[in-house]
Length: 219
Image (cartoon, rainbow, N blue to C red; front, side):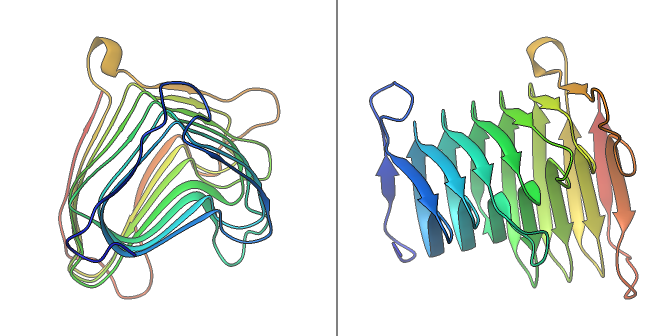
């Protein structure tokens, strides 16, 4: 817990795993609660029976050049390689690889008045398997606001959706998926992998209804 004024950095030295290895844990590999300014680089997280990263009220989170392999062991309750409740500020996930995460690979769950100013996902590889859910899942409820950019990533195999967005109440979201040249995302399902509801899904959720706003740009 760095509080609201501290910062915490794991730098590594430019090689895989030089930021540290966390392996064979029965719970979450990394837990972050009420923190600001966390930067994790060149980490290896493998064979975890909980979440790879579990964040509760995290502001300005950055992760780069890291690998997550065989993460989580249950669909209920939700688990993921990265699971955030109320991610805020300017956050990024860059040049990472996730392989075999149950249930989701990344799940961002926004409630209350959480404001995610910008979350960029760039240059990552999302490698699913036949019992997972979504590669990237975002859920916004109440009066949350968010801006997300998903560019230049590779998505291979998902038993759910590659990208799933669910909004309730008065939640607002602005999302850009892809772009020109290197910003183009790649989506591939092979063999028995059949997306649950399609590659990219936007939907209102729950019985409360939705009267917010969704702005999207898909290339």
